[in-house]
Image (cartoon, rainbow, N blue to C red; front, top):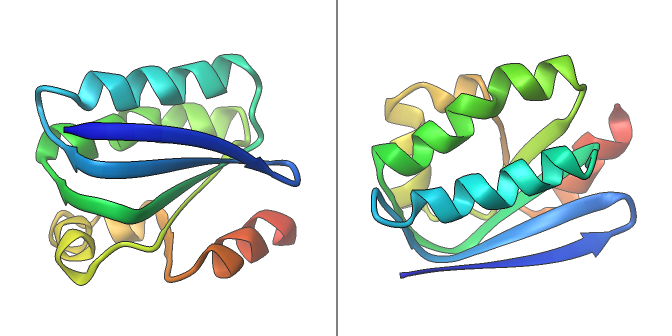
Length: 114
């Protein structure tokens, strides 16, 4: 089961992922990100503190937006991942493509450094 909560902090949109992202619900994550892109969000922070598991389908959602984020100069930062979830990003090399930070404060620093 996945719950996605959206909050706005300064100029950044924070998507909090709670539960698990897998093939059955990755479309919900895709829809949430697509909406933010259409709303011209300039920075998207993904709060992974409540994320227990992410499948390759969930990772694929992030991968599918990397080029579009670059074109539209949208900053994506993921933070608060557990060691287990962060390891999945690392194994697939996504930590080289996506900015991953430990805390919300560090994530916000990335946004405001741009």
